[in-house]
Image (cartoon, rainbow over all chains, first blue to last red; front, side):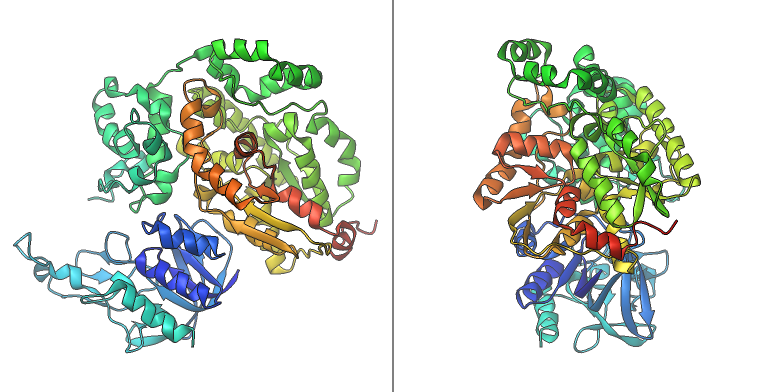
Length: 183
Length: 416
């Protein structure tokens, strides 16, 4: 299956990007871990003809150098999903966009570089109600929004939403990538 | 530690986030139902301590699996509920439930006398009697066919063996006893794609209705017979076992293992809906399709709950979008409410119609030429509740194809 843009994650960032890109005439596919809480924009996207895979997850990517060519999902088994661009909007820990191991925080699908404190003791704040440092961990992208893998920026894998490091405006981070991709 | 501490259906992974509760169609319609989180992972902790904690309201679970699709932690919420119903539950109306679930038995009795049975099922006094028996009199039964699909197919066997490539067809009860036209469309379509069709030897009902009516043992018997028949078919050279019903497919691929404990790992990759098989081969260039050029009009596609769980809507809709002139709208996924035998039962009928009402209103508003879906019970429910006719993608494709040109491209008749 071939699309212009494949979006990994059906949360606010993914659905916002998908809806805007679809309106701009791009053929999009959203792959969502769950059913998406953002029912209104999701339904609008689907009704407008956007493709949406609910309850599915990306299990592997196929690379040509630093360009992502295709992904495969758990439910679609043998089917290759190709696209010109991919947007990683898989969220933080709850949606498993990030996974914490004993000594590291990783991005489990593509192994994107993640910014986190290497000292585990500094992941938490003893004050339960304070901002927790781990909430700020995430993917640190290039200026225009592409992820790094092993220190090298990917050519066509962009990151949006909660998966980003630091404080994120979810919708704005998605719209920023939309504005680049519709050019 | 966590990794070595995972129970069947991994209920410990539940974070109590309630996403499942928010998407449960029964939850919104019926205040007596405790909801998937409470009925599933929460209740399971108690039931493991003492089966007396089993809650009879679990019978309201539609087994739609929307909870599992929504769960971000991979908890098999629906399977936990189904498994506990099989283990601790009992039938609320044993005779009715057993008859509703015994599709093969009832189908073989009804089929030879189809016109009489169909007329009787529409007759008011019979409807009243069924009402007393616990089947809602407002529910329209699917009509039985005089010609069983298996009998029709027997005549086709010699022509089917003229092909070089083969697929086996799991037709299911609905095609066999009620709607052989769909099976005939399947054979037409696969032949045009260059494949001869074979039957499974001794196909039984997939057992989905038995699972939801507390007849796990019978379902497991059917299941192992079906799996053995599929193993033999694959050994005998079929490239895959194909289906035209999303629910049968889902039951055999997932519930056989999760609920009945049958081993399916060797069969699962080869058992799929025909639309997936055809789509993948159209993409790889192994199958080429030529469509007739004509105006078609507006259609809507309804994703059945089990189709959503399979995640395969995209195969059916992408294939349908290949048809020139096809104006296809994919409806937002809503449960139609029937959930197999559930919606036939008198005590469930009002819930069933209430749950489906959103979908019915939307279809009426869009006023399509027809609705397309991969599930037969959704078909009954939508046809009864909206008046629009409901088609299977296989029939739509078979109708839209230029069968002759497609056959020629796929070398349907090999040189002998």
